[in-house]
Amino acid sequence: FPTAEWWRTAVIYQIYPRSFADGNGDGVGDLPGITARLDHLAALGVDAVWLSPFYRSPQRDAGYDVADYRDVDPLFGTLADADALIARAHALGLRVLVDLVPNHTSSQHAWFQEALAAAPGSPERARYIFRDGRGEHGELPPNNWASIFGGRAWTRVADPRTGAQTGQWYLHLFDSSQPDLDWTNPQVRAEFEDVLRFWLRRGVDGFRVDVAHGLVKAEGLPDWDGQVAMVDGADPGAPEDGATAATDSGPMFDQDGVHDIYRAWRRVLDEFDDGERHARALVAEAWVEPLSRLARYVRDDEMQQAFNFSFLTSKWDAAQYRAVITESLTALDAVGAPATWVLSNHDVVRHTSRLGLAEPGSRPNGLFATDPQPDEALGLRRARAATLLMLALPGSAYVYQGEELGLPEHTTLPDDVREDPAYFRTEHAEAGRDGCRVPLPWEAGAPGFGFSATGATWLPQPSGWAAYAADAQSGVPGSTLEFYRAALRERRERGLGGNGLAWVDGSGPDVVAFRTLGADGRGLVVVANLGSTATPLPAGARVVLSSAPLAADGALPADTTAWIEAERPA
Ligand code: ISL
Image (cartoon, rainbow, N blue to C red; front, side, top):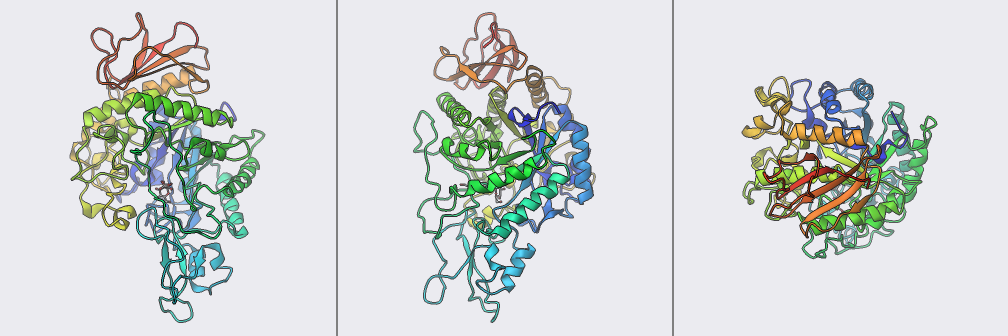
């Protein structure tokens, strides 16, 4: 591996294990399935993979409900399979990040089972957030907090002495099967530091930290009347120039005390530094605004990266893109951390579909069959344009599995196959996130498009997905897969991502244009046309890559990005 700070410019590919590839034919993806398909990722040209949780879990929230942090769920394989995956990835030059879920455990975790059996005030209960209820008989929840998945954030338990449902309440920011840990408890801190060491010893290169902004709650758990939302959609009240608005994240998120936890984790990772401090990375999943607040998670003695969701939640609007990019670079430069860019993940509507909606920010948490259907051709065109823009930006970029195939959201899932707790807890007001979690199509002609040898898939795939299959696109000029491969190859060869950018003006309000410089000293001009009419490129422009063919007269069509060789270094 070339540098200790590989993550500064890395392209990191998110694997959602249950939907990537199935090795044992049961219709659910697994670790051996992933290992067998890692060549696809090496050929794609990414630097690292991040695996969503594969730990022992009752799968009430697709593995984000962990019952044992030191074991692999039988659904996904064994610890030996995890070791084999890590070894194969490293042999291919891919770093491996694993997901860590520290905000809550599964209710099936041994600690929570012990807590249920123990008395109020016991050390067992003190690892979680148990409180007496309000009201004369404790029949009202301790405060008014709502779960991010809908419904209240508290569940009442049985009194362990009588067995009657008259006991204390426990806090769960997510599903009731995901009780929140109490991070003021030193046992909790010690346990997770040990879990980090467990996976570091197995060779992982770092961790994506789930709900990193949620671990510490405001003292006294005060009532709050603000809105919790799973994903912030385009805020209708946001300023037109697109700058992200400061939001009050409430007493459950982004408390100052959370940073001590990450400073301690940083020291744990440094124990494994092999003389290359910072080679092992921590990545915060933190929906925190404004970006100057997010930047606090990536100070030098904390994490290396934080997902910057402002790009994902941006409208298809050049002014907003420019504002988001400027604001991101400014906030992160101030702390010496790389910017990160994300367009999709397992929690949001795939950007191919999102960008084909009349209002790209609407319904971030899943689409119903009854919603206005996205224009898939337009969405894919914009998705490719957004990707080419993203891959030239300074910093690190994330690719969610299937994005390289141009996969759209599954917008017509039958309701009876949905599994996301958000669908149930909102009483179907939210469709939930299943539509972006559909098993990948690998082979156009095989049952289940080659996801598993038996053709089984845990969620149904749309019948039209043969055209998206990896083997149908591989080697086909102009396919989305070949487009991603070309862009990633070019990014790598030039060493893009490590330098800043300089805005290029003069192309009109609907164009985002900038110059940047590769590590090889070659300059690149990036022009993204987010408007509805073609825009001319500079005379004699040498186009390195474009997200769609140029017009006959050489102009850059609507919803298209081009990379142009810069005559002079940027
Ligand atoms: O906190 C939020 C808004 O302020 C949410 O957006 C939250 O950060 C997000 O829902 C967290 O998602 C992660 O944790 C969940 C899990 O269901 C998701 O899949 C995961 O990405 C609970 O573990």
